[in-house]
Image (tube, rainbow over all chains, first blue to last red; front, side, top):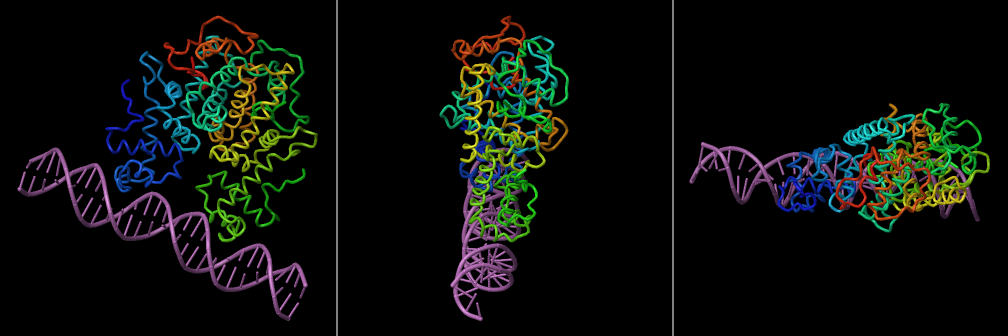
Length: 252
Length: 252
DNA sequence: CTTCTCATTGAACAGGTGTTTAGTATGTTG
DNA sequence: CAACATACTAAACACCTGTTCAATGAGAAG
C-alpha cells in the first residue's frame, strides 16, 4: 500500500520515468537490443537527456540494477502482516500480481541470463535464503535431508527461476503469451506435487545414480519401494558419470 | 563414433567452419553481441566471405539453427546400442561429454532464451518426449500420476533446461566457471533425489495449494503424512491465488 | 534584477555494424 | 585453348549506435 507507482509513472520525476522505462525495455527486449533512442522516445524526451541523467547507457543499466536489487530486497513489500524479510518473499509476491510487476520479473530474468555480477549477487541471495529455510525445515522435520544441501538449494533456486527465463514456454503451455496470473496458477500444482512426492514411485533411478557416482546412501531412505521395474537403468556401460539426472524424465 | 568433428574443424569445408564458429560465438556471447567480423577473423577469412556463403547474418543464424536442430534430432548419436530416438537422449549424451559439446549446449540455451521459433520447436519436442515417457511410466507404475500431466512435463522440461540457461550459477556452486562434467555430476544427485522423494516430508503445502486453487485431490494421495507442523500455511488472506509454489522452498 | 544552477533540446560527431560491389585467383567444363 | 562458375578478398557504403556539445529556458539564490 505504501508505494504503488510501479506501473504508472504518472507524476514521478523524469529521471525515475526514464529508469522505469529502461527496466521495461531492457527486460522485454534485452540490454543490447534496446537503444537509448527507443527509451527516450517512449518517455517523450530527447536521447541526450537520458545520458545527462545517467552518464552513459551502462550507467543507466547500473542504475536499473541497483533499483531492482533494492526493490527486491526491500523488507515488507508483500502484505501488511509481518512477513519474513528476504528477496524470495518479494518475488513470490510479484508472481502473485504479474500484471503489475511483469517488467521487474522480466528484468530479473535478464539479469540472471546475462551473467552479470548483479545477477550473481541476486542468485546467491536466493540460494542462501532457500538453503537456510531448508536447514530449518530439516531440523524441523518438515524437510527431507539431502546428500548435498547446498546443491539442492542451488538446484531448486534455478528451477524456480526457470519461470522467469522460460516465460514464453510456460505461457505457451496454457495458450498465453505472457507470464499471467493464469500461467502462474497452472504452474503451481505440478511444482508442489513434485516437491512433495517426486515423480518416481521407486528409488531405482536414485540408486542407479548413486552407484554411477560412487556414493553411498547419504540420503535417508525413508518410504522407498525397491522393486526394479519401469525405469531401466542408466544406459549400459559405466563410462559416463551421471546421465539421466539433469534431464527431466528422460533417464528411463 | 561416426562423426566426431564437432570441436575440431580441421579439414571441414570453409562454409562448415564458419557455421561452427558462429555457433560457438553465438552460444558464448549471444547473437546480437557477436559480429560478423569476429566470426570471420576467428575462422581466418574476410567478412565478405561469411555473407557470400550465408547471404546475411540472419541467414547464418538460420543455418546454425537448422544445423543444431538436425544434430539434436539425429537418431543414434548416443551410444552404439539401439537407444530410443529423440532429442532428449542426445542432449543427455552431450551433458555427459560437456567438453566436446559445450558450444552446442550453449547455443541451445540461447535458442530457448532468445524466444526464437526454433527454440519453441525444440522445447515443444522435449516436452512431448517427456510427457510420453511419463505417460508410459504412469501406465507402468513407475511414475506417479499428476493432476496436470502436460504441465508437469513442461515444468520438468524447463527445470532440466535451467542447467543450460543458468550454466554460470550451477558452475559457481562447485567453484567452476563453465558447465564441466564435474558440475553435471554435482547436479545429478540432488535432482534425482528431488524426482524420487521430493523435499517435503508432509503434504501440508500440497493441500494448502490445492485449497488455494480450489481443486480437489486430483493426485493420488499415496504415502502422505498429514500432521500440520513445519511449513506454515500460505499467508493469511485468501486473495492471492497460488503463492508458495513457483519459488523453490520459500513457500513456508 | 542578476546570477547561478540545472533540466532539456537539437544537431552534430566518431565509431562500429551489416552489407555491397568490383575484382582476383582457381579450378572445371566445353 | 576459351568460357565459365565458384571461393575469396579488399575496399567502400549506408546506416545505426552511443555520445558530445553548444544553446535555451525556467526556477532558485543572492
